[in-house]
Length: 171
Image 1 (cartoon, helix red, strand yellow):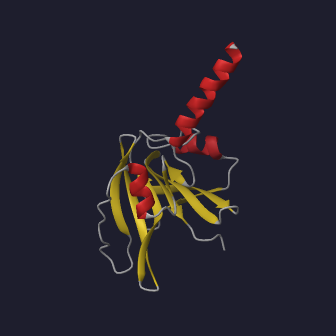
Image 2 (tube, rainbow, N blue to C red):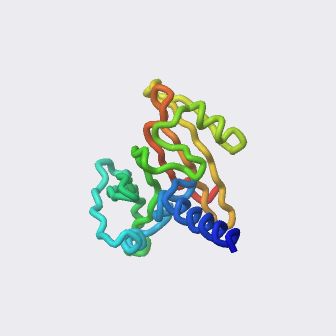
């Protein structure tokens, strides 16, 4: 009986922790490719969308996920005169949200490398701003037809932002 209680508590903790964490397809309850309506329903709020400042830019909205500010970026689609928005990227600069492996804002490049050295990742310096580096984990979820990337932006060897982006259909 004691073993069953311990296993049940572990399962519940894992389930709750998993929902509050960052993965290659979500931050908390918000998933890449979610519609505006789906996100509003999950969060129980009306999103305040900001129009892009560039012709082909993304619409954005700021929300709170588990007391952490999260930026949502949406791709606007106009198919058969029906406008819809799909979530194409999610980012946070908060140390409150971490991956299941415990990585996020505040961790070092070395910690990222040691944690994800067995994953499909790439690391490179920003072309324009040489102070920035990126550590990118790519994920091709063939089952759901999603190709996403989890990117850690690094400055002075410390993660300053974590983002997830939709990369298309994997082609």
